[in-house]
Length: 239
Image: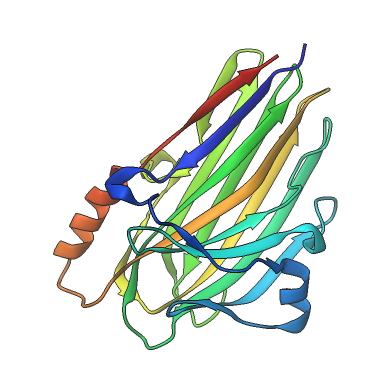
């Protein structure tokens, strides 16, 4: 018997899912080799990188930009991001984001992934990310951090497919304080399928929340409350 577990993150709070718009998709390999920037609204994405020894090639990954009904911009990476049967895959992803005119500032981040898991023995998905203050990757100190994942084995499963909220034990720090006009994002994507099983993170989603004028922290507190209202849904079992 095969069981398929699939989680889909849901941006439902405050009507964020309504009226979501998407820009044209891009190929990740083409972005890396050309060094091209891509833009939606006032947000510019650049400095793409993808490193893996045995995972999906960058040429198989589609990059899409969008804007939620609540006004937040996001980026999605979609493709055959999978462990393979009983496999162990580690992927390094990076990119930068900046506001073209300097304002509004980026005040918070969150991430989510769509999970697929097939087979009798489950597996593990772990996606950690760091947003660097810069200028550059691994420079300027950590502006924000997030960690999401999934573990399935003979004893059941645990799942944390989306941030928010922020889990202290995982070191989540979703608020960018002080807010910044540019961030450099590094992600570590680890997929491990147990014997006879596959796990995958077929869509990786990252959104950015912004403020127009820094106000000493009250906006960040309100932003944090709004982010905590977001939820995920979609456990679906098939046999």
